[in-house]
Image (cartoon, rainbow, N blue to C red; front, side):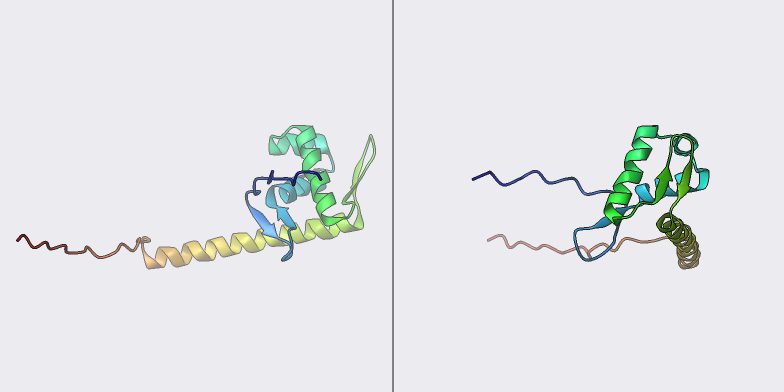
Length: 131
């Protein structure tokens, strides 16, 4: 009988839970995809993101695998969006815009409240009887 796999992958930073299952979307992968979608070039997108081209390609492939859909049509000369890619880039843009709005609203409300204060427990009096 084979030994169970005890190696657990490190959790990805900045993930969005796609469902209640084990699937999650990495925001870095979504950002990488958006850059390729806007540039229609892995070379220009990699330069824009300051990533190596292989690292960028890996991010896009991982996202395609996670979603189970081809997002980009690649040839040696061109990159184009598939229908699924067009839908996803629209979602990414609208989600980023919504996130910016939420951050601005929270910052506005935080400014109106004043500085954040950490709640600390009240000091406890300790008495001892010497006898």
